[in-house]
Length: 366
Image (cartoon, rainbow, N blue to C red):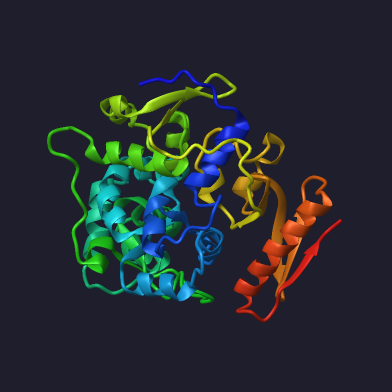
């Protein structure tokens, strides 16, 4: 189904805000929000808390802590070979579909070091080491394997095993609120008490089709290149083709074809957009190949450098940091007085959240 309608950058931006729960804070339970968003990028362990605070009403970090320790959400390598905070159900359903991509991405970094290593043998040896259930760091696991494979070095061995060959969970206290802890890994299936879903035996791709639908629900309208940028998977054209009759299509200002779910929200482009503070590596930005709907090309590098950003009128307009209870905002453009007031008000809420109500200090640099 095609509408032939062109959507400008502002219309796409408003759609993104609505899908990402950034246009209005949602009353959605935390677990449902994590599922709806398709997970939150989480290599920086504290960042998902800010991401959820900006999206949910009355977000309580203790709820996410309980879900991590209760094993309904999990930290694991998944989309784009990055650590994501995802629901246990999604981790088990999606992991096998990501196996090939994860291997390829690690080999893209360590192909020379791993030349001649039989990856299936390495995976089997790593599983044998981990079979005792003892949580291990990547370095500890690599050392246990280095006697058999001394040449690659511990970093290459560890990255290949932990990020690609053996699905693992990063155990709490890593990722808990205001907690600093190293990464300790155990097999994902043993931690969650359920096996990872195997690939479809008939060659169909129900997981790929589900990923397309889930991505569009949280990020659409979007092009197939945007979908690939989010998940890192190259083999989704067949999945898109299989559900094409379910979808509607649009065009963006560059003429790209955009896919979407027919009943997903596409707000009026003039819908007011509140100020929102986003954490480092937020998927509202990283989940696209063409990020112009939310960030100017001149500032695109901020999205991969770990900068925390402020959305004003739906676009990245400032960066922010926090130190000693004070949120400091550095504008990327001139802010009107009304915008400064709105940034200050939202920043005060963030300062209070991050300091457990001990500070609401905000400073806007000029």
